[in-house]
Image 1 (cartoon, rainbow, N blue to C red):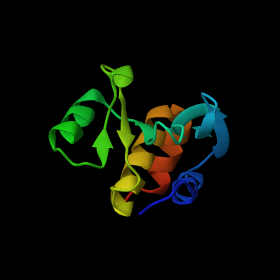
Image 2: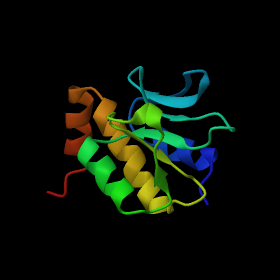
Image 3: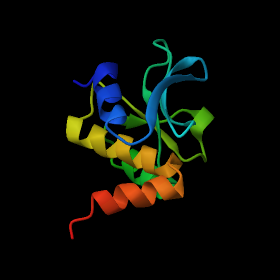
Image 4: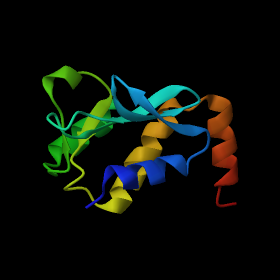
Length: 117
């Protein structure tokens, strides 16, 4: 079961990320823009960005690792239950959230450094 410590390790491996607070909760930012945050303990869940089609597909899959609340209806963000997600899937979701918030120049450099060619 991944923890906040695992989330921060994954996130800090991405370029120009920093630990911060966001909406008064622990979070991470890329180039000063929030890309994930841990909701309060009472609320639970890790908030990450994704496109609406992906969100719909994840929620439609009925995978208990993913959920939402009315606050996020119509918004490109999904909640992750850290107790139910597999580490590889968490890495993917954090990276995708980072990609959605990273500046284009940084994203191009990242993609160039990680291309298979």
